[in-house]
Length: 470
Image 1 (cartoon, rainbow, N blue to C red):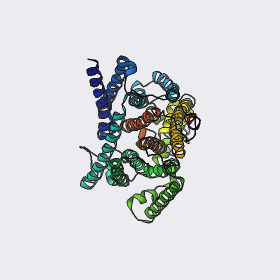
Image 2 (image 1 turned 180 degrees about the vertical axis):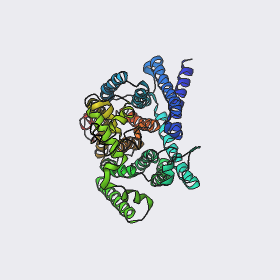
Image 3 (image 1 turned 90 degrees about the horizontal axis):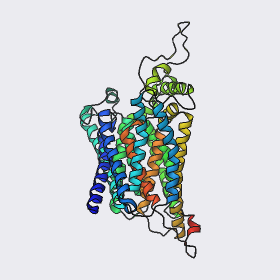
Image 4 (image 1 turned 60 degrees about the horizontal axis):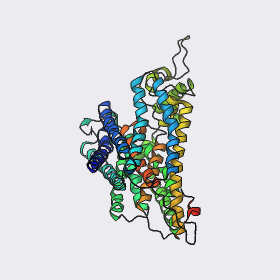
């Protein structure tokens, strides 16, 4: 009976997690409430099964492998203050429904990540990672086929937004091309991680080639400026940590190739007269104050200044936007209209996740969130250090591991979303934040379970001095 319970709950736990991570991007990013709430319910069902298994199976609970408790505690303690603060601000918010959605966009990926990192077996982690890659490849193929077949007039079975049809921008299974480009950025970097790391999985290395090609093609069809700029910034991170498994001379040669390819591709793109490049050239760089993003950022900053420490409250941007949207140069007493009145559009989101975080949760919330991210980055720094020491101890002859590709995917995916979120609201899209949470959680699980010391030849201490290990 015990085995039946373990197998059944384990299967349902894995199944519900897979459904959420794979289905949500196809359902318009789960942006509308009639997709958001069913997906959220399934997600909480998966977390509930994780909790039930944790309680009833106790110490025998999968993954049944040692975990680096120091790193796990550091990660959980890093996130705990922000989560506690967020829950307090949620209960203080005047508009419950929007505050609830804001809270869930933080809580659900965190809970999902904990369940995956501590509840999945090694086989389940690898299976989920491969399924995510195949799903992103299918999403990219759909976007390309849909574009050439309908010219982007439909998003799945629904009509696309007219402004994107007129601009000839593909949006795949999302309503907004920029948000779909965010998913393709993750796909591109996942493929790149599989391609440049040393690992014995030939099938996955071959999968990386179409994944990269489809992702690049789809991003070009979206004409997303933010995607290209974000990928350009993250290329620096790729050069820093992407080739740690390789011998230094070969690593430097690969870095030169990547830099040359990036610069050559950028130069070729800028000299060609293609619509995507025209979006950069025709952007009103000299009239930024007239752009919608500038006005949204300005309004958000004006709102934040009214409550800089604690913020205006989760989910309150859309409600207070009409009050702060107009430029402050108007004068009611002299009947002088502001230079930029609020009469052309409504801002439901700030179009900058970082600015909206500061506006709604204040400086305290922003600092606590950065503290949580710092704890996560410390985890990745430990993993990168261990891999470098492992290769150096073996004179760069140690066998390549698939684990490093998973770790690198999580790091690069988080980095590209952090950069892109400076100028967009990708992380307000439930499917994207869940996808990111799942990929990062798989990397976290791999890092926490890598507890074997790095053994250096001639070191009688078992390698702990070289490892600095757990």
